[in-house]
Picture 1 (spheres, rainbow, N blue to C red):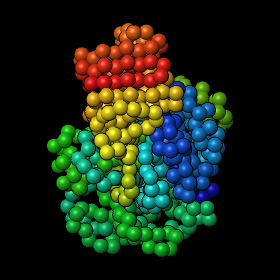
Picture 2 (cartoon, rainbow, N blue to C red; picture 1 turned 45 degrees about the vertical axis):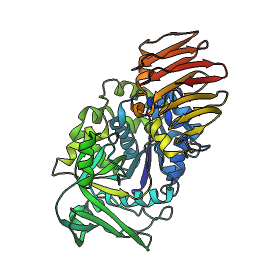
Picture 3 (cartoon, helix red, strand yellow; picture 1 turned 90 degrees about the horizontal axis):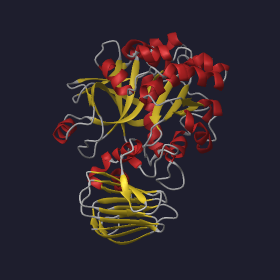
Picture 4 (cartoon, one colour; picture 1 turned 30 degrees about the vertical axis):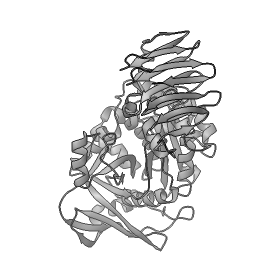
Length: 463
């Protein structure tokens, strides 16, 4: 069977920074933040034209498999893999690589998160195809790096190798009938097309530069390039972020490409417990969903919770035996990681407010959201996120939006105090008067001297 390309959507996150709309039963990737489709459904749609649904997979929590099937009905049911517990991206990617590798050991995989916002789907697919081209080489991983627009402290960075170096071009590949990119190849043929076989096409002055100038479809692809990676940097402080921008670093979008057998080899080398835990997954998947679920419950229990960046990509970047590249993503991108990030993507009124749902009052530079059956009323406030739903309300300083997850964490630990007939969980909250109706939870973060009243009609917040 010829080796093919597969897309794997990682949909296992908890989305706790989007409390109260994101819940354990319906986390962030299942929210409709941009129009009528959920973030997961948007991601599935974005990947159409890259690979067919028959080669699209989703890894999610076992508790969300049924919900995922409803949101992604075009994906074969057996290709939605349920993890018994979340163990971060390394375990999820190891599981998918092992299962797909059972079908096609030399398959080339593209992993991407389910909850990012990429409005230009065509530009994303063009960049992803370039990454997959380079990822066909053995022991090679390719990331998509986003050109920074500001020195963000909430994103990881990809740092290219400094100094002058040659441009390289991967060999062209014959088009396949379905996608134009998956011609037949076996492991030996692919190994022969490693980085050492790439042709030097030009000399660069900004670091070793790999360039894919020709599209496999025939027309020239516009200046698609890849840079060898030196290292990964996780969420730097502001001063370091500015230095990284000057050094040509890119934001890490969490999108990775590589061959299934390369991922297997990397896990065996850098994270043996995960490699051992997934040994039987492919065989169990072939034999049925129930057998796989039973095997994963035993396999996942002892696994470490660690991201692919820390587990594989960082040690691989320090090894001479692995090749790490980054392809610049020439498209708008956001991980929509916080309420503040969502506000930045919305249309603002003349007072700098982003508003969705029923609302009234006076505010500046706020995010005001009311779900169906709820309402937001504000007076004399600024720089707040006020999110009102029938069961819970958030009032948080937008500049502290990264910390919203501390509210559901505090709830899980049983912290909170009565606020009228409801419950109030305050984090760094000073001098606020909070009153809520029965069974309603009010979470506050980084605010002071506010009056917050929640009734059956919605939330009222005044300064």
